[in-house]
Amino acid sequence: MLTNIKNYIFDLDNTLYSYKNGLFDRQLLKMSEFIMARLNVADVEKADLIRDELYYECGSTMLGLMKYHDIESDDFFNFVDNICIDDFGLNLSLIKQLEMLKKQGKNLYIFTNASNFHTERVTKQLGLNNLFDDVFTLNNSGLIPKPRTEYFNLAKNQTGANYEESIFFEDSSHNLVTAKKLGMTTVLVHADDDRSAINFYENREIDYYVKDLESFFRSDYIATRI
Image 1 (cartoon, rainbow, N blue to C red):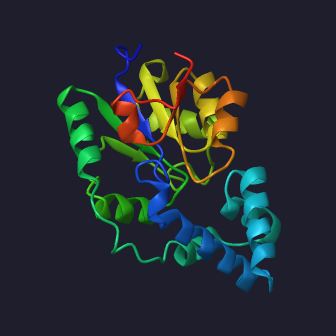
Image 2 (image 1 turned 90 degrees about the horizontal axis):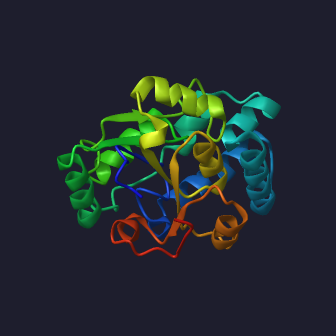
């Protein structure tokens, strides 16, 4: 079923690296700290709740803060992206697999709701920065986030990727739903979320459910509809 796939498209956070390394958790903490400081929220649990509610309503916490609290995107990015990532190392098996795809003539892309700065420094730290043909970020989209169709249309215009010949790897099921409707094969990558399995079974737009990227390339699926 994958013989027609020419484009391998990856989300960044919790997809090109495992949620277990804690990088995204550090960003989530910074988001809550930002909310506490800028919205005068004293309780971290309340800040976490606001962070998550804005994410699910608006596609990103930052966009929710911009919509309801007049927060500037640069202020948010500068605060949240200022995290230490020096302790994160290379995933040599994943690098080898992506290099193999390149040798096979496949196109590799990143579609992320992260900033240019975060994407560049994280891919460099993980040794992935020279493997992708193109990268599409929230900066490139004019702050239009996944899962909006407009985001994917803009990404298609930039990369030239034919979505009927593309496979998309994501840890967020709602982003995969849109991708499937646009013609992509879809892969849900497990994250530290009790709903991951539920999301797979509730969303028939998701073709594969895997532990991580390496598992997918071994054909070791948690579940599949194909």
